Length: 399
Ligand SMILES: *Cc1c(COP(=O)(O)O)cnc(C)c1O
Image (cartoon, rainbow, N blue to C red; front, side, top):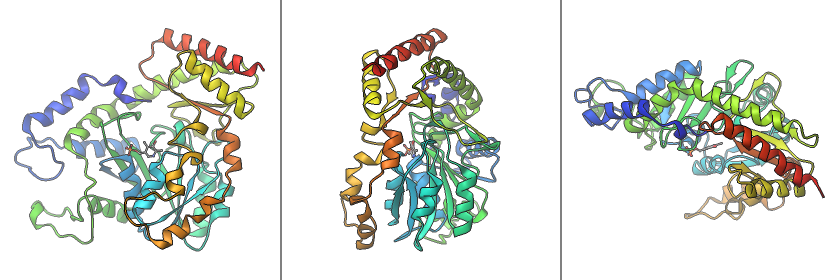
């Protein structure tokens, strides 16, 4: 997945454009910037790649998720349904707005189980946030039906699945709002950065103003702009956008390398009868950023994870025992460890976490191994890796 592996001359050229005139900010300074508008150009590139009406860049993927929720008017006391398996940014972004994360089970797609979503809906539910984890996606049709029936906002966190599609539509462009991250380890990197995409004009304008202190961005005099509502600063800088601009133009190349490397590893592992691959919803095409598979039980998966490490295979994760991606280890959320007071309403709203068991999620995450697909591997490295993986997994299957 990581675009940083292929950082090179194209990225340096775009950054140098910015360094030449020194305008590091995306807004204003028209006279000084010598025609360079990297953030605007990157937004235009993303708009055409994602076949979406609006794109707004932000400072990170976490900011993107928070801004998407804020743009849809979600805040204090509102419940947002999210999966038990995701990056911690999902609940951070919800908590930041004073809203309440409602964690529900995933299924064999490793994303939201639509039945679990439906069962978690209450009169306070305002949004469903599907997280397209590890290069593949949730069942968007099923989630859309649920959201339509209950008048909920559907937000897609596509931070780990840029380039994947569902029924020929780019992931992120299907729900009401989509979020991307361009942090250092994502498929496309800006160093730090993110984007919110939407086809809804109001959501776009809200995101545009909210991320820049509420500035309306009308007219050419920044000092004279009005502030229709409260905002904050989640701006991307021109330097970061410049890196992303070079990277996004290489996205098709990155995706084809990912697919090629993924296919070699998958074909090798397919020889092992006990290995089952993660289900991709009908009509879905992965981004191939990760290869995900299930082993027969938790103990075998633990053994396999250890054997893979011992064989020198890096970047294969057993998320069941990982701190950052699975509910089992999110004690700082369960115990509400916050620097500042949290409202009584949110505290009460999170009490369910003390008792809720995530048996179905445990069943899948306990047996899952998730291997990052790198862009810089040579053909030989991929072949050798495939062999070593097969051996390590076969060893874990022997009792
Ligand atoms: C990386 C990631 C984020 C957060 O992105 P940052 O740019 O690191 O803030 C959010 N959600 C998912 C699923 C991610 O993988």
